[in-house]
Image 1 (cartoon, rainbow, N blue to C red):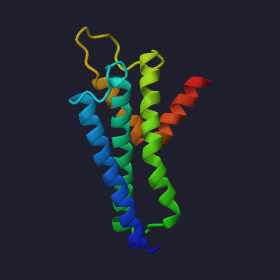
Image 2 (image 1 turned 45 degrees about the horizontal axis):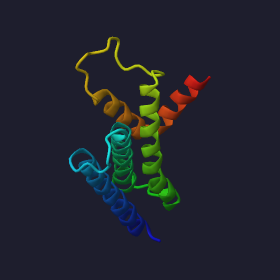
Image 3 (image 1 turned 30 degrees about the vertical axis):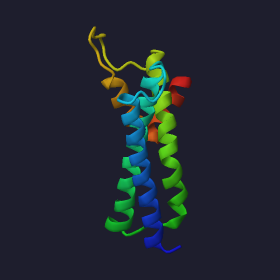
Length: 140
């Protein structure tokens, strides 16, 4: 497969994945995708992290293909798997925050929203390598 074709395939996959995540997120928030909202926050964290991972991959596509002109088809697998890994990291970030193993703020607000969960999930999805390293450090 030539470089241009592989870039198109990867770009379409990433954009469709982003649209799919957006539709799932919309239905989760407004359409009540699940019968109960018990797991909404963890799924929302996964969606936000997946969006962060897709953003990172899309940035990689234009940087490697257009700016640096060093696109390599050997990396296609990474572009397909990275958003999935980001989704999983979003779920893990939720677990670590909910368990209190990671703390986002010094004092708990009585009217706090879930924005801290979403921000941390986005960062976890955007920067999978550093997030996994941090989790490994906590495990020690």
